[in-house]
Structures are given as structure tokens and as C-alpha cells.
Length: 186
Image 1 (cartoon, one colour):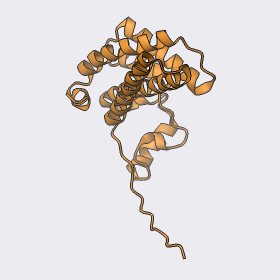
Image 2 (tube, rainbow, N blue to C red; image 1 turned 30 degrees about the vertical axis):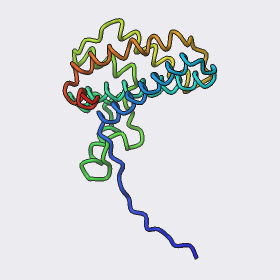
Image 3 (cartoon, rainbow, N blue to C red; image 1 turned 135 degrees about the vertical axis):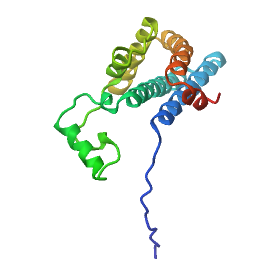
Image 4 (tube, one colour; image 1 turned 45 degrees about the horizontal axis):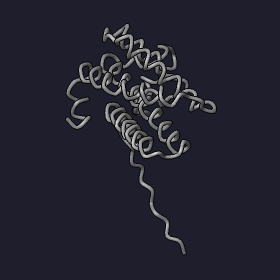
């Protein structure tokens, strides 16, 4: 006889900033692992998969942290359109039917590129041209990984990711402040 376990709904709640910081930290861990593998002469395939994981995690972390900035200023900035679906989502949240607005079908959040543009153009938090170009490269690489076979320049990817690491620390340290620095273990 098989005993049945009673299933209790326990919401998995991860605040936006913690979600972004976790992905960014994991991305940097993958990047360090990649670098160690490169120096130890690891084979291409295993090294490339670790670099792929670094791209995915870092891009995700960056996107979530940009969305954290948008939500902090005004939650509406997270959404691609203020339309009937978003208004219905606000009503559903007010009624306790959903917790987050994006839970309602048909409500769409801004994409990576739009979140970067909104932080720069609407929030007025200037994103240096070199950083912006690097962010758009990382997004392009992420899209390649998600949607097709991957053909990337290994050295370019690792160089850009290492360069972005410091630039992101400066950018998010200044724009998010102590929550970012504490989340980074400082």
C-alpha cells in the first residue's frame, strides 16, 4: 500500500533583486569556472557549455536587475503596454486572485533591450555607451543560445563578459545602492 503525502501549496517567493543577484552571481561563477578550464586545457565542448551557462545566467541577472530599477520607480514601466489586460491584472491583484501582474494571461513585460532603454531614457540613469553595446551583445548571444545553434567567438565572449563584470558593479552599485552591494556580499 502506498501512503499518499498531503500536498500543501507553498509559494516559492524570491524578491526581484535576489533573483537578479543570484543569476549574476551564478554567471560569474560559471565564468570563473570557464577561465580555470581554459587554463587547465579542458576540451572545447565542456568549456563551451560552461561559457554558454555564463552567458545565460549573466544576461538573466542583468535583465532582472534592470527590471528591479524600473519597478522601484513605477511598476507600470515593467509592461510593454498599458492596456485592458494590464488594467484587468491590477483588478485581479486587488481582488487577491493573483500576486504579480504578469500572472494574468496577455500581460506582457518589456524585453531586455526595452528595459535597458527605459532605465536610460525614462529613469535618466545614464548607461555608458560601451556598457550599452556590451549589454546588447550579451543579449544577442543569449538569443542565439535560446533559439538556435551557437556559433560564437570564444575569446570575444569571455573578454566582453569579464569587462562587463566590473562595469555592472559600478553601474548597479550606484543605481541600486546598498541592496546590490549587500547582495554581492559586501
